[in-house]
Length: 111
Image (cartoon, rainbow, N blue to C red; front, side):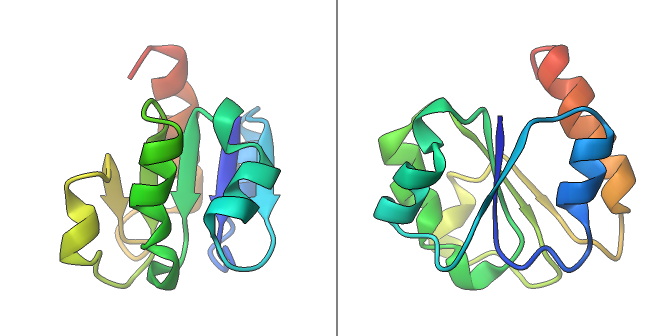
């Protein structure tokens, strides 16, 4: 399951669903409580589409150390979250469809 936090203006969630992923969208601000309620414990991947939610990265890793954290946003990843982020992608460089395919196929291949 892939959990998406943020407005997702670039359509990554739709692209992930089209690629066959089970996507859960987090409504509102990504906090420990909202991540937990959205199913973080069962998530394989957490995607942040807004760097305003970057403080959720260490929280998510603490709650689920195995979750893969991906950012898909044009803004820079804050320094404090860089070490816990597995992949940071700028939507201007890779389309949502390319990223979705990679995330879905990479998960199937054990990446």
